Length: 168
Image (cartoon, rainbow, N blue to C red; front, top):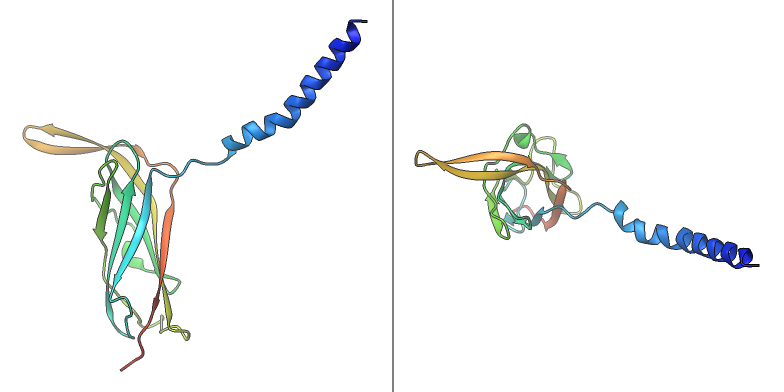
């Protein structure tokens, strides 16, 4: 007679684990948020007209415990990837627990092959595609930066939509 309660107990335990295990383990499937993120994008002027030179700055936030640098970025304006960012590294250091503004290349609001959008809404997107954690040392009076691994969890992106001014 003791066998039936043991079987029932085993079955109850198996069913309980079968139901609860996916709930407990489901958190493991979600990737952790990246420790280095694009916090914001600033474009000046905020309402450019056609053929206007725009200044682009991105703010990065380092939520990690060491400096990050060797930043690889992709920038899209009006859905078109700007080729100036291809095969480039920005060697700005973003200190742990801090935010840092990084000035990027200027761009034209419109250009050949990328006319002003019909709805006068110009989308600008900045994606941090890769970065490296860095070790900083002083050797013979000089600061030496050494990459010590890739920042996991990237890419991180933000976008802003600018209301374009009418042509004058």
